[in-house]
Length: 254
Image (cartoon, rainbow, N blue to C red; front, side, top):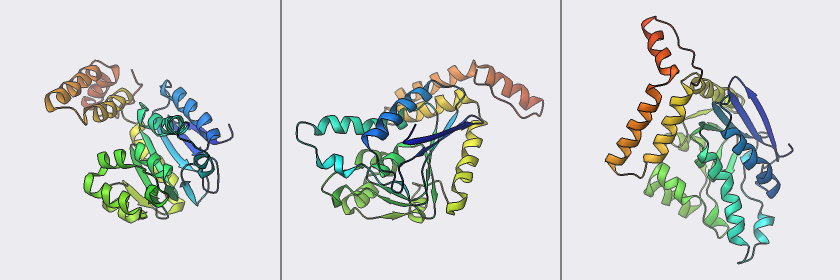
């Protein structure tokens, strides 16, 4: 593959957007990235995904403005549907996805980190919805759900740049570390998640996402169904045995 680099080791897949220096999202990138993510959905040996950008300058600076400039009223909807598959497939992954944000995350890059489950940022990370700066709308749906209406309006209507420290203070970033420590920190988080019972992790992520907009009773039913599913697994029974034997459980995903 040309536009993404991948490495799978110890149940963790690191995916690097390989279009430096700004790692923009082109048609060619979409054609590699989306099918690869679809294939990863079926892989039970991959428990966590880390997504980052090549180099030290940008995680992803958004879509290719040359492609956008060629759009017409007849072609824009198809383009948006194709573009949204990048973010939607990340959000749909049964495995948790950690964004290791190594620099600029502007426009579509900002949308991409919002689609991830956890965001670890370099102290050089800079975020910007950017849409209003180029006459477009970027990010409101995901940002409102993550951060609430007031902050989403502040960030999106101004188009201002959000630095890593602010992202951490507001809860958008789980941790901010020096650039040189970014991947190791993301791996620390990934290894922690990968050490947990994978069926439980997948069900927990699915429950969080599916119940967000449900009424209380319906959401609780979904949560209890997930509990019942996990309760019958070998991993759960092994964890109980390990607890009483004062051992550390080793989960097998079954």
